[in-house]
Image 1 (cartoon, protein in one colour):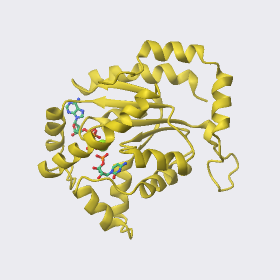
Image 2 (cartoon, protein in one colour):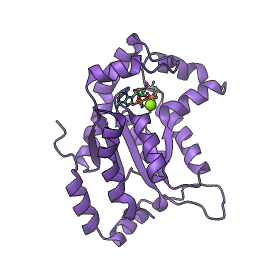
Image 3 (tube, protein in one colour):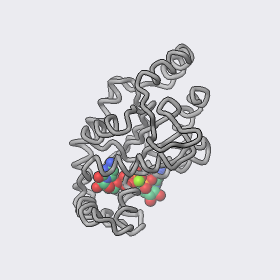
Length: 235
Ligand SMILES: Nc1ncnc2c1ncn2[C@@H]1O[C@H](COP(=O)(O)OP(=O)(O)OP(=O)(O)O)[C@@H](O)[C@H]1O
Ligand SMILES: Nc1ccn([C@@H]2O[C@H](COP(=O)(O)O)[C@@H](O)[C@H]2O)c(=O)n1
Ligand SMILES: [Mg+2]
């Protein structure tokens, strides 16, 4: 289905062939000052290593991100979690976000991108896992426009629908969207919108598709080599 998914061997050969200076030149060409705030050592876009983490509801994105953070020292930003925090903070947008989440739909992109941007600017790290984002083309374009950056790589956790439903219904974290009615809507949105974005990054050769079945540990052993291969690529 994902015709142009980058394989690990393609990744290794492309990273070893790609000259460091080419990468710097590419990043400089897309570079804007990351923050308008005056900091002593402001991060610029060329310093960042951005990974988008995609997959259906319950495919295990959050679980695997925790392992990547522990092993490779990334900052984990879950778009859904940032939106839930916004609701909990009694923001003026809280009820709109809550209703959207209950309905399994996608919150207007500028809101989500601004929340991600704020967290990135507050961080002293430069390696980010952006989990559950972009969920649709509007999300993707808003990130490119507001942040002025593209992801370096994109992970896609591919999991059978039945298994995703089982995992979500067993999650037990009190989420308003972990019920069968909302899960059905989220799965529809996933198929109608998220997969277009997956295809987009596949066509760009940035996609790493991970089989998200099996135990958490088995899945992480499929994820590990992707990040291990990129360790030397990061500033
Ligand atoms: N490989 C696995 N096998 C069984 N259960 C798993 C596995 N990985 C994660 N889980 C469990 O499945 C549930 C969903 O996982 P997780 O929250 O990581 O998914 P997610 O992709 O972040 O979902 P969402 O998009 O809804 O936030 C959690 O309760 C988690 O503990
Ligand atoms: N880019 C995003 C991400 C999430 N949402 C909304 O939050 C819900 C939960 O997201 P999880 O990643 O934690 O599953 C999701 O169903 C959306 O309603 C969003 O709007 N935009
Ligand atoms: Mg999650």
